[in-house]
Amino acid sequence: MMMLILLFFMFISGLISFALKREHLLLMLLSLEFIVVSLYFIFMVYLKMMNYEYFFSMVFLTMSVCEGTLGLSILVSMIRAYGNDNILTFSFLW
Figure 1 (tube, rainbow, N blue to C red):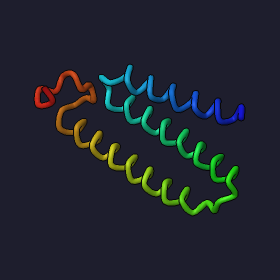
Figure 2 (figure 1 turned 90 degrees about the vertical axis):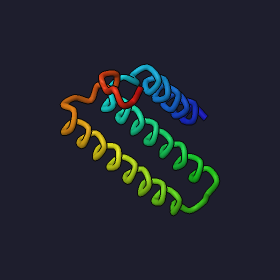
Figure 3 (figure 1 turned 90 degrees about the horizontal axis):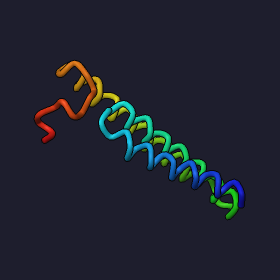
Figure 4 (figure 1 turned 180 degrees about the vertical axis):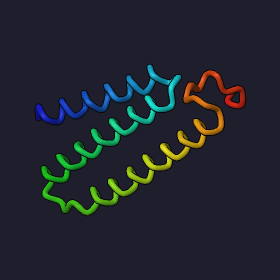
């Protein structure tokens, strides 16, 4: 039970860091990856407690890797086009 509380605390702290660091894209991507890792741990604990198979965790990891690479590729293309990752300086987002 203490492990689930710790994992939910990890998830909530990831959400808070995502909300507070919204001006830099790299920090947002890092906090999103932290949220994904905490969700993965929550799924693993849940699947272990219910004695289910771990196939869903592999599908989840595959989708989270795709999300991470897509975010990094968008970050690289924005840095090549505009020179920084500070979201507040982009005029097309407003």
